Image (cartoon, rainbow, N blue to C red; front, side):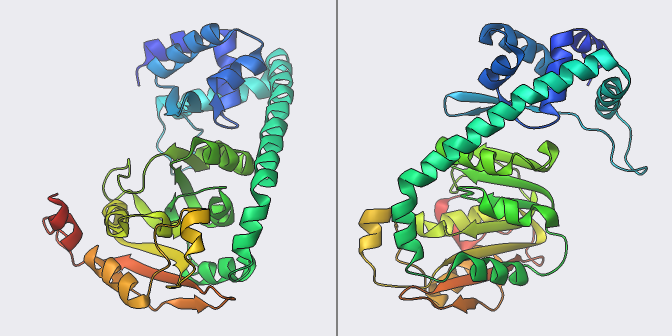
Amino acid sequence: MKIDPLLRALADPTRLRIMRLLSAMELAVGELAQVLAQSQPRVSRHVRILCDAGLAERRKEGSWVFLRSAIAEPRGPSSSPSLGSAAAGLLAAAERDDAGFAARCGEDRRHLAAIRASRETSAEAYFARHAEEWDTLRSLHSPDGPVEAALARALGEGDLGSLLDIGTGTGRMAELFAPRSRHITGLDKSPEMLRIARARLQNIPAEQVSLVQGEFGALPFADASFDTVLFHQVLHYALEPEVALAEAARVARPGGRIAVVDFAAHDREELRERHAHARLGFSDEQMLALLADAGLAPEPAIALPGTPLTVKIWTARQDTRRGPDEMTKTEKTAGR
């Protein structure tokens, strides 16, 4: 980050307002235009200047473009100062000390509250459209509460660090584990599901959560990026679960934990047609082999019987003994 473009980017009242809005939550360009009561092309020009200066970041999600702040105030005395954190601190101080700017930001946040309410209404409408089929599926297995409690116990009592929730769906797992995580990344293939998750997670600090569109068979993350990787009721959609688990192992840090919550092997064929399940659950033998082939060290599984489906929780650790030049069986087969 360079000082000249940073100062030029901040030398505009609209861009100052945009940065204060982005400090609260990630927003689509169209949503920013709505809050600011400006045309979308004009807002896009301001956004380009902020991104070029390194103050904001763009992210495409289907046909939508989302913006998030690329700067944050320093956390604690041990944080190393930077131009970005200094700029974030200056903007926060400006809202505290400049009454006119504070009033303008307050008005923007009132408009932002309307956007949040609209998101929640859209989420409720989506749930209403799919409530019957989800209720039918839930009736076949253990209630969500005991499963979530068992998963929390399986992950231990400590800090989960940087957590990747693969197939985040409605964002429930991200919401559940946010208090125990330094940062949560929710990944989903569906832009609609990501919008549902965004509505659910909008009260979590913007710098603590990222929502990313992507495939679990080709995760858009660098090696060794996460301390915890979670598949919650998603691996049964994978035509090649071995590839998804190999990707999870790749992005897990040494000693990191992978957790899979899914169904034990069953014979409910109707789930293939009605709910697009590619796999009718997993046996312990299958799952342990998949985890081992991905270079992971499995831990004891947990079973939560239901009628007729049993939910299983399998956990494993990234094998710290694996050398950097070793490949898993899955990677060798794929020619990686």
